[in-house]
Image 1 (cartoon, one colour):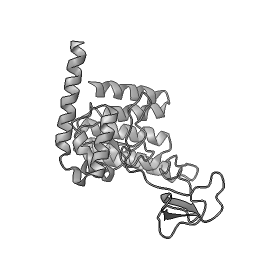
Image 2 (cartoon, one colour):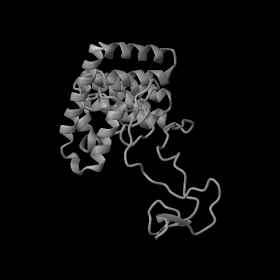
Image 3 (cartoon, helix red, strand yellow):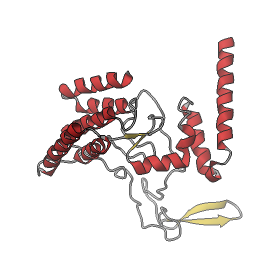
Image 4 (spheres, one colour):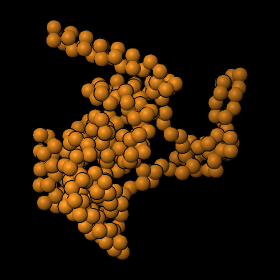
Length: 256
């Protein structure tokens, strides 16, 4: 039922020219619909058109390909292919532009050359060990205010669910993306590609998948445990324990 409501809101937004909102609500509808059904194919097609109106042709073509792949209806498939041809024509026009952001574009560059011994570290510093300070960094060149001396990928990342719309990035690589792909099982988590979806599921999401009602801090701990433990051994037991604690906590609130 929610799927049809979100789809209707998206269609209304699209008809009044609010394509950004339309994309958001088509994504919400996809989170409610059964994967690989005819309706999901239609939703991908509709979102592709909205993305095309935003001149985000790369993502719109990915969405329409998803619709074509899912569809088993001959007439619908023909319609989707016609839509794809139209999007390809628009994408090839010289005056059009791509609004897709690269998820690396906001990452700064090192202010100096890269350290040969420490990947991601500037050669303006070196790692040393002293009896007084232990392991620490020592400058080898003058370092100015604002100089970038280290670029490092975080150990773990997690999307915090807030009132702010989060249907704009991949839950795995955090890529700024609009043609998001829901998890095939829970439909809650969103990914930029099948590759990111598969990696997330293998690394940690398989433990989150049936536990999406956990608070954000618990979700974060689950991901962290998967990252720092070998293959997440005994993590299933930890999740059951968290569920038990959550049930006990709810019981106390009811008694209070």
